[in-house]
Length: 413
Image (tube, rainbow, N blue to C red; front, side, top):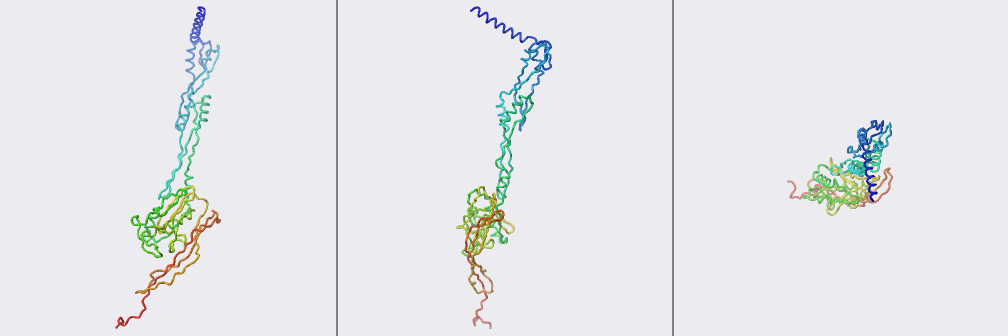
């Protein structure tokens, strides 16, 4: 046992001596490391002198948001060279750069450089359309960036770049503009001097313009415009009641509904409710009018997979409606034909002080309207009956000067 303790103690003392001696030992004569003559120096002195000359190359990572410098760990083979250096030898030190937390470092850099894309936007109002441009985003290609980073470290490069990719927006301005092209425009004329009637047409037009119909949504004229009452802003103007033109609140609104229906038909919208006037109107062909009242509505549905937009305006004696959306490449048009003309009965004659027409006679008729669908090159693709109507005739009324003989008592002297 005593002998064993002596052996262990001897080994410990030898190791300490070797360590202290190795630290204080001298480098062989004539040894040069990295151009530094270290012959005769102690190991500690040689380390200090050589490492002062070593170029510790930093690494810069370029990113879209700015340059980043990771905390690099430098390792070299200087100790091995010093221990094994031979007399008169000249040596170069190999410096290695390590980034122990490379993946964590890169994950943080990537997160700081993500830029989400911004979709183009569309605003629709009574003034029309306003668009904002899209903005592309970017994301970090983590695998490619890590490979570039480790390669730069290994090859001694002073810089590398974060690898980013384009992140495209889902909606572009070009797509929005393609989905909001004009599908149709239809106008009718009115007498600009009939101010109350013009007011009613303009008010109805104002209530409708700016409407957006989602796919499958149904439009109601009465719901959009509201009741034709003085409280709702409408004025008195001529309306057709039981085949007669009489004063009524909201007169002229039917021209707005008729014009809107003309635009809807030409845009390929599906009209689900419309009724004719009892008398012919002069601003559209027969069977293309749309009478609206408390009991009658104009309704149509958006059959497209994208929204449609309604714009209306009045001015210079015309009311115009436009429909916007995504064209389907077809041309829609209503076509009217007269089946029968109905002659009015003989005019009613009344006596008076002068001869004049009190009510103009007007022929009635039976008519049909067909919806015709054509391809872009004009080929007819289909023709369906839209409406079949009967318009009443109007009996004229004339006043004539009395021709009855004058009674004796009233005869001149």
